[in-house]
Image (tube, rainbow, N blue to C red):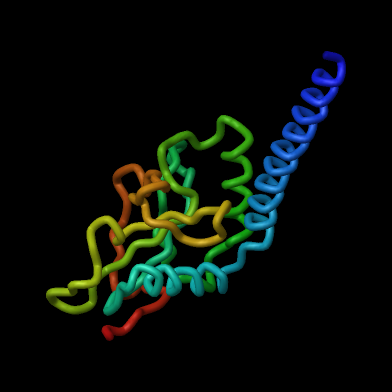
Length: 170
């Protein structure tokens, strides 16, 4: 009987260590993703998003967290070079660990606009995406295992002068 309790204790201990290790790994990778995020990576992953979902003939706009109204909403990046990524990351950090900037809004988002009439590759459920620090990429707002809000209204729609990239038709 004592041996059975010892075995049970060891098994539960091993399971606890594994679960704790996986939890710590998840948090560490999310932190690393947040800490090392760059503008170049966002552009690369925005294009990779279109490739993953086989979307072509689109313009891509990036949106970032804006808390100037006291509520979270996404603001279209007008000029990628003039955008202060560090300020955005600070807002995301503050929002994550305090009651700052409430709202059902992504921290970084993506909006795609069809360039040609009758675009057959852009679906309504793929036209907006949010950045996932856990996956280190943009994910569709609506999918089987992922979900999330894009932005509370009002948000500025994507337009040609604000494209960070275009994906030609194929």
